[in-house]
Image (spheres, one colour):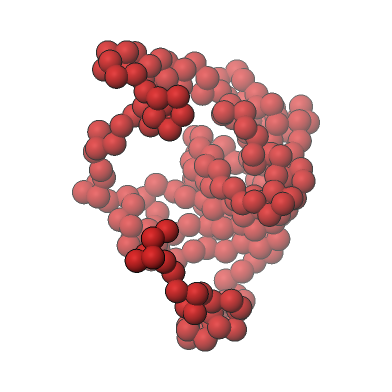
Length: 218
């Protein structure tokens, strides 16, 4: 970071008291009422409608990770009002989320529903299972996930719409043309071994990725 852009250390907040001094106090009654230790009927309906979530985990050394998960609506199964199941579909096999869970089980899960500006957050603990009876609940196109994530709910609440409305996330007029940035294949190759200069060769690599998407979605 250049001297011009260097952060001034005197403005770095070092403790909770200094942070809270900048904000008006929250309404204790409303904050307490908002948080539940279980999934009520609204939460279960929200989860059933959500085709997408992000799950946050932490490695034993404190390294943080957030992973997106998506599937048709209803892919997350509600076992009871304190337990949900998230299938682990084929990915890049880094296994960051799964490894983090088996070493440090605390997780945060944020559910999103297209068209809803509100989101639902679950904080809790997680385990990884390969129980055949559990995996059978998550079969898609005749294929089962290798494992599933079992989340035990400790805290659940609904987030207000401000963030999504500021972002205009679902507004069709806010959509950006994907072509303003290179393809995923080109960006990764540029970041690693270098992308081919020949546009025809690059187009073949992009087409191969699309075919692999189709073949390995489940």
